[in-house]
Length: 304
Image 1 (cartoon, rainbow, N blue to C red):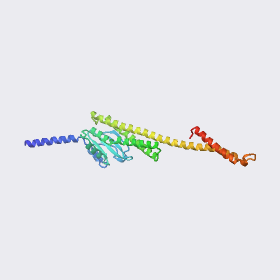
Image 2 (cartoon, one colour; image 1 turned 90 degrees about the vertical axis):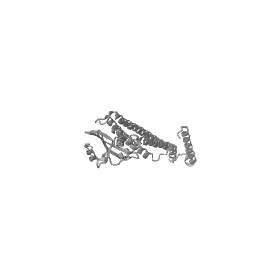
Image 3 (cartoon, rainbow, N blue to C red; image 1 turned 30 degrees about the vertical axis):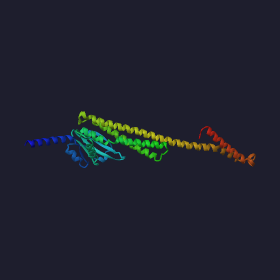
């Protein structure tokens, strides 16, 4: 009997430990079952559950819940499709609506990486948002390396496909800058705790999210400025090459202008011109002298 009591006590303790280790768990569903799941959890949502219409990250307070969306660019295809998630937050629940399975993969990664599970919804939300921004800084560093390679190529006059490459980088950076700005606003809105769903001692986690998004946005803005500088360097190189070509054409025109004048003058064939009978060698000599004189002047002036 005593052994049974000890065994029962150990089982109860093990159950308590398991519950503590599991902590807070979100509710993850898809758009087809979302209405039923929300109803079962007492969440009233006034809008339509259409994940395809989600175009940006936002959060807003509704009666009885906080609702919002995430529109997360895929790092391998920033200009392409995105992960779209609709979320609902109450005093004790977090419901995620996701048709791509992205939320489940994020939660699984969090569970594998974290030694201690998220014990509250605040810590879960922090880990969830931080997880899909986890590799962004590394990705932005890759942008920096690409821009450095383009800059080096400009200095070496290897500018094939430069315009398409720099345009692609700038478009992707603009998309990411807007995305980080939206995440920063979401973090600030969560930190404001308008519906008082979050414990005050945990609001610092949302401040951390805002700070991280702001740093990523600042990094992206810096890269956009760098891309502009690289593009300016390319344009300066193109302008210098065009100026060099124009300078060469100007020199050629300047050399041949007096020759044109000479040939025009002696081509009039006036009756009283003494050079008509034996002036051909003299005109040739005069032309050579003019060309040599022009070249000497250009050399002295360091025009070429």
